[in-house]
Length: 446
Image (tube, rainbow, N blue to C red):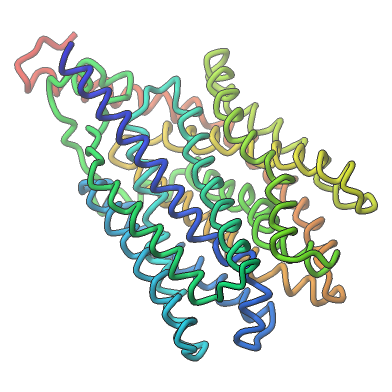
């Protein structure tokens, strides 16, 4: 019992540190959002050029996610997370140095691209570690808070950036201050304990969770082809792109929309965004819990939560952006829209990992990260092009993101038709492996 309590405390500490790591990543990635106008003015470039750069950065994230996920399935995730966050810290420092020293745009361009290598690792490493730190019936809630940490970190990063602009601190000093915060928080990763792979899966509880044996199965290169060919994994990857595109567009361009379309300053626009986007936090906190409750009611409950959220999100989003701009109804409608936009996310993440084996979950997390990166890249690049084609305003560009929900719902229905087979196959495989682990440890397999 003492060993079990120590393990639970270690898992809880690991989960808490993962929250911090996700917060660091969210703050770093979204730090540029309130600074679009200042950065374009500093380098005398258009929104489209900066959007292209940041879009290419997300493409670097997408390309680098695959090896990070593969490594997360083979190596200690604690060490990998230190490297990932370390790259983010280094690149933020170098961006600050570029701006502080007035280096040309190509130097800024190169460092921003390299930062994608660090951001690519956070999600697959964290998701894999959460699966081995949290019991199955609490995973939806756990992933909701993990995503909330990322979104909350992003909000704090944007608020910090806009606050620095309000104080006229300067772009270079602003990024260097961000690097100092990231470097300080990086130290917390040295207190993170590596979770035991497979220890939280129900079929492995007696064999691995109790400490009887270790789950020694690792991903091999030959597994990648099989994972890539599984129909449900292809559907999950497509869902990640469609699901993340609307919130990516809104998160990235909402401040610019308020500034260019309604004449607000950075700080006022960021404050209004944080209030309007509070629905994201509520959706992440409650969406995961709702999906856990739905899963207890029915094994396909998570998918039904995803479908319901995807059906309601465009209704409130279109209403908020189509009505005349009046805060009295704009803010409540945006809060509701963001709740439904993000509420199905924890369920999608949990389901994606549960239909795959423990030694494949880092790689599957990388698949989700690739989908997210593709959505972010499209959001950075396509949105300003649409806005420029429509006269420079972002109003209709934001409304057009609702078009993603029709194919998303269709994809969810296709996932629902295949999920039970995937869950049963994983449970059966882990049950057989648990017996072998018990046998090898000298136990008595049932």
